[in-house]
Length: 622
Ligand code: ADP
Image (cartoon, rainbow, N blue to C red; front, side):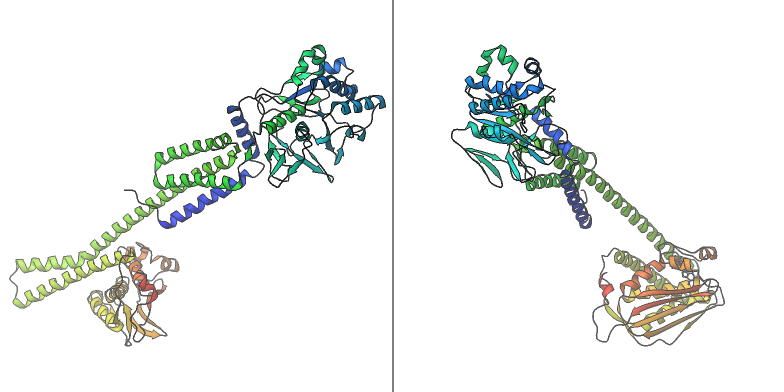
């Protein structure tokens, strides 16, 4: 069974995933994400084109041929007047003129155009902001028209593709509705006003969902797949039957010839340049068809991305290796379809947010999983090594009692010993085997202590008794090297904790003092109560250590070079255990040492307060 991640890792993981979500969503709101979102939008748009519908509009184009046959760009107003006149029999619903008429020209032509506008009925003229000032139609024209609408493209247009159109445009304390919106209004029966709310724009029975957004209420244009029927004035003159195309339609008159074209926009459907007038007509079709696309709300975006990130997170939490990566791949692939799904429901969803968040979450999850697994492998390795070393230590420590037992038992079996000698040996075997049993118990206890599995005993015991016992036990070792032990006067005081473990600690300091001292030296053992602490000090006249060595001696398996050369060094685990034991009693160890002169190891541990029954704080951790 797979081990679950530790809680600490799971929280960090959740935090990282949350960060992925925030970064991806915030990034999707920056201008850097816009090209990606637009590209995805265009692709979806082309993949899922709307069904064609009968158009309600037509474009009367002023193309190259028209210019060639009607006096060129200089006669633009005359051509517009001609167009209006030619259209009159077609009984159009409304006419939108996408030609700016801001200043006076030849009075004869101007008054002719004014008359044509007046005769055409429902005419909407164009206005545009240029250099901070509105280029409105001359009053001569405006007074004869029914409305004036703006012909601005979307501002901050990054790639020139006509995806959206601002429904309103306000600047220089003047506001205009879009030309196509005015044309739509004029085409409806009765004088319908445009009514607006924060969220949408109402015209007659049509509600356009275009919230006020500081960008002029942008509306997504649903381009008619087969385009807008377009006939040029030149063609119309040649073939009068084409006039039927404009019957009962809203007609957009504008320049399509490259020479006189004021604006050109890329069609998201074909990718070709089309003139602005076609885009206005397409936007008009969107309104007539009521096929509006709305933007997914921020809340929806965050929720969907959260879902994706959460799924990715769970995948890496539960699965490993290639399986996790496969699921991640499927989720990333799936994220591509989220905008498609929304688009099919007339909602524009930012691709960058959902794709970015799932990609980021996959990357972070994979890295984090790798990190956690590595870390866990490292811990397992460490544990294994620690355990092996600990076993080595036990084996090493057991060697001397075992040798004693072996030797004594062999002697007892081989020689006829006196009763007294036999008893002496039997009691020695007994004592040594008990020592071994104690050692095994201590080892197991320390192992469990360091794993945090064992409750340390909470008993009151006499500190001087422990020290005295340890001195007695270490005496034979000292004698062998002719080292004199000098136990001082021990004040009567009690410690709260585990007597056996404390014995182990003091005994270890004493045997070290003997081990790392030359023969014929002295070891001083003192104990004093200072404040709330008992200080048990063991001072030797041994090989000593430099500062760097002192820093390391509590590390497991560390042994100084001098100690190793002396041939006395053990496994280097004893002091690390001593430190743990003292720490579990709420105390610490101080070491002062001079190379070649000797060392002083001091156990500083709290004295049990009178009547106390609970151990010091640190001991409760055990
Ligand atoms: P061991 O004695 O089994 O090697 P310890 O953990 O008890 O392991 O001690 C670690 C090392 O610290 C010793 O190997 C020795 O180098 C050094 N050391 C410990 N006590 C003394 C001492 N009293 N004087 C000099 N060096 C000491």
